[in-house]
Image (tube, rainbow, N blue to C red):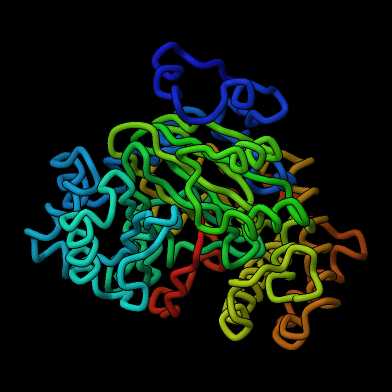
Length: 451
């Protein structure tokens, strides 16, 4: 648990009440090592929780310099506010041709709006429109927020060759390498980058898919509120949909008092939380920069929640959920992900070498995890539970789960688990089954997500 420095207390003045921010029950769970964080990502139940690894971008080899493209870092270094950043972009045709993003502002009713919401590929038009609103006095420049920034046209990822639209050149998924296959779903194709300044942020929402987010916060301080799943979360979304918690009305203050977690994110933090519950974010300083990978772990509470995304009978369902036809694309990728894990399991276990090693420390982290017997046994139990859950609850998964997945389930049901890394002989070799096919093209979903 972190205390607040004098500088942080000054940043927090006029934002959210200190008695709530200092409430031990509402503070995040802090871990101190990269291996511990990765272990929690793979096997923890983090519904209603919020996990933070301070200095995580350094500990995981995910510094801004290693992850962000040079042209975007130059634009950020040349700007002190989102308005300045947008004007910088407008002067540079190469940036406008390379990137796409949502450009958001707060309207006169206090609701967060997106400029030209139907024109996803038109960054020029979105920037022109929001700056027109600023120049005419119809939008407060302090409220401007850049959401879900990606490249306009898919490129081959430098590590695994997958066609992606993320601007990030390495991720937590890359740190885990073959072990990333031991999840129900992990999206790096549409990973979004978010940029805000003090007074801007992301209004209250639940992600389009009931998944989790692994976030990296490179620049700026940010407050995040997350509410308990189910009835409380649904009511918060109904009452405060797309509203930013900057100026606190009595109703918003009462809503904050219902939050499960209130977290101050610091520069360099890496963190994990569920986007399947109501959450909101408020930037506090400078020009903030963060990004999110969307994942669904094999923990049956998380895979089970994800499967409820389109289930109107679920207490977690909300208007705005991803359409069923698009969600089946998610399930198709989940079926392929289960097949990767099943292939590893039937061959004796995951290796620790990635397809293209770029950070020596990653191999050591993976080796620590693979040698963690209790964790690997838990992953196998969760794999079996998630497969059984999918086969019973999802017609799509029943029809699309390949034979290796069902064979792996029988394998585990009969008590045949993974061998130790020493016996399996796989600790030094790359796991080809964990790689995405290099020329695979995915549909961009631009999910409403993260913060």
